[in-house]
Length: 576
Image 1 (cartoon, rainbow, N blue to C red):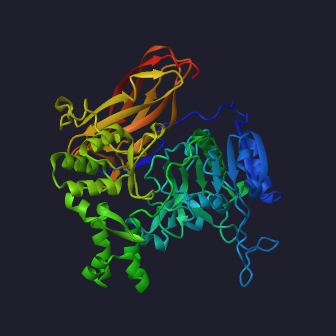
Image 2 (cartoon, helix red, strand yellow):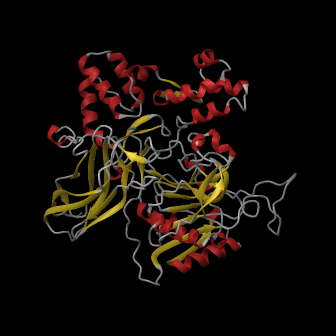
Image 3 (cartoon, rainbow, N blue to C red):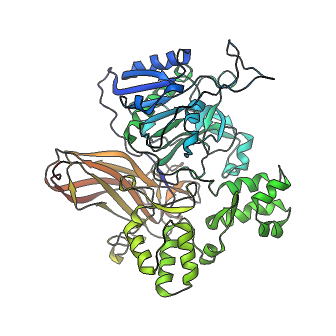
């Protein structure tokens, strides 16, 4: 199972404090086109839902203005060339009406919603994963993480799905060949291009390969089926749809309110990873398109000389070759090539097992030059001996993650962002033969807190470790896509302890019957905050794990088990 992780909201969080019928207790600043009808529409909409709403001009917005507000919304009117009546203009002189983007320093960390083209344009200089992949988003979302909080709280969103034809271009992107003739979508806005501008989607490949980013939904667009329409990196939330509130569906308006509430949780969390290049899945796209759009110069740039010599213009062989070698690819000019060092070891270059193997090779004197070469190629570290590498790996294993888009490196996440990192192993659970799963008991699990002593006011991480027996699996938290029972995690927290953010969950895989499952060694993590009023002394955190275990031949009845993690609450240090 790949150690690529995807953040999913599987347990609801409390919305910002409000009583029924009262505005949500948030201060929201709308930065848009001053004096426009769109600004008036947004201001009226936001005033219906939030305690305080301010407005400023998009082009004149400064981070200093944001300090008095909980959430900022960056937006613009139409960037398409339009006449006074709003009709689309064509021909000579029909240039885009791009605004002057505000200057957002790297230190900017206010929770911010990016609406469509205007929002995306504002952060282009920042080189984030929320990028300008394509201004081609239509009116509907698909591939929705329906359990995510933006569909749950403070408004429960009724995701009524309808069938739409699958866009032709989807077939040439990863996963596109598995789609039927139609796709289930959720209509977000009531009008679309050319009446309204198209919305913005971001590049999906590598988007979620760091713990500061999550994909929430794709949307109907002119590129591929996974292009990101709703997503987050750090303190920025992409709302790719272009409509102003009046042109959103009723459920779309509720979801936008939920998104404002959701991004508030990420105050101060500046993006961790900048996008330095493309993720490896792009070579699958290139190999799919090369026969249709053959160009000699592009062909030479995309495919290395050894591959061109091997396959020539037998284009049908390119895609299977890159699929087979996907886990061994490394950057090569503007494209990708197979790392023969890694392929020779038979290990993915984005799994921590590669680091383990290479460090062990150094310790044993087994091809040390190769081992050191691989370690230095895929990390930012340089150590003179095996002991240095082992110390670094042991200290950081729990926080390591691999990012394609951030430079094809293993990086170390801050403690506050623990989650979609390497799988790691629990010495007590995974290495204890008496606790190994088998056919009679195909799932074993335990709960653990990140520290045995936690100060009042500090954060802790609850980890639920699960292992399934060989050939057995449990089902994805967002649903199996079939009749099987989804995995459920329910917290029971003592007074003074609150959950923060989302559950971090492993990425499911598709089983032989087409359902989405987890198998092997798994970790589910949740950040907790121990309040200043938490009782000193023993701390017990309970989590109910509900699941259904199946293998290819049978399924056990749905099961619930209570897991307990223990620690001790101690007084905060003076001045904290």
